[in-house]
Image (tube, rainbow, N blue to C red; front, side, top):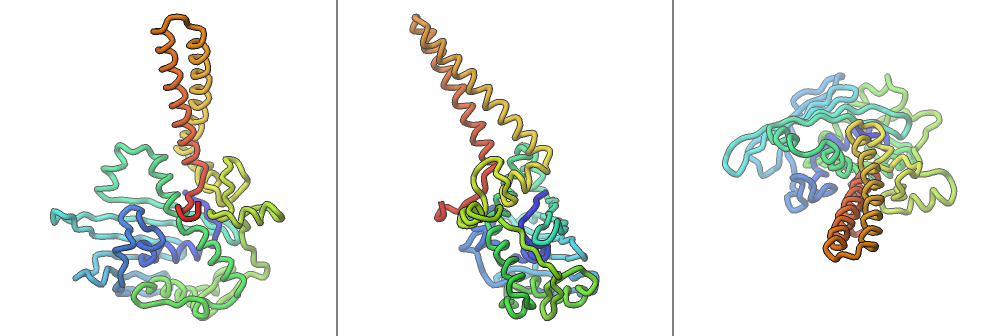
Amino acid sequence: MEELPYDYSILLENLMDPAHLPISHDGSSSAMRKNAQALVFEVTERTSRGFAGKWGNISSPTLPSTLRFDAPCSIRDDKEIVGKDGKIDYTSVVFLCRPAGQGKSMLLARFGGKQVRNRSKWIPTWIIHQGTTTFLEQDMAFLASQNETLVRENVATKDLYLNLKSSDTWVSEYRKWLDLTGHGMPSYFGHRSLSPSANMAVAEAAPAGLIAATASSYPAKGSFGAMFARDPTNRYFRHVVHCKSCLQAFHRFKKFQKIGVVLGAICTGVAITCSAGAWRATFVTLALLMFTGAYACTRGLAALTQNFVRAHRR
């Protein structure tokens, strides 16, 4: 579960857009910038209840992936993967997206497939979740800015987006679906039409004033790096407070961090008072182990509370 600082329509079109993966998420999972190429799309279904179709790389002889959007907020993406040994594996992901207010959305995701099941057997849940959180943070600032641009410009997306058939077919289909059905929504931005809210709000990165200016200039767009800063873009508030396994890991790290520091200090004190060299070496070693454990817990807390920032922006 993730709470994100942009409208759910932005979230939906981002999740159904495969072309941005090698660019925005270079190095994550199987997404590599060097593999970016034109895509081929085939729309097989188009109704007021959503749309569906097939897609694949232009270099692929077939269209191994299928996507289905079921209105108003469900996306399913199934993919056929051919391994180096020629064996075929199938992966599937289902996204449920819902509004969490103006300029805010919430995401629920479920992943399936043989490879996913094998990995999840030995990787702690909180590590898997933080990997997903990092993935979402890689383009979070851009998407929040896109949301602000839509609200500020107040025009249909055809006047803002350059939708290419070789990359943006699903995005175009979604905005055209909003043209067809948006009249039943409180507000929407379609491909050719729009109906904005009377009082459109954009989720701010921080409270107004100097703090907001400082936060908005930070590479992670609002992330102070502080553990409990009241910042809606910080992963602690976006995910950890909503997730049982991550919150448990957070409290355990806090607990064992304190225990490690206290025991390390005690061992250090005992080592200082020991006259025997063997005992002194023993307690010095124990102190180092305790402080190392405390540091490891600190790194775990950082993984749960600090946003991803690209290397060139650090």
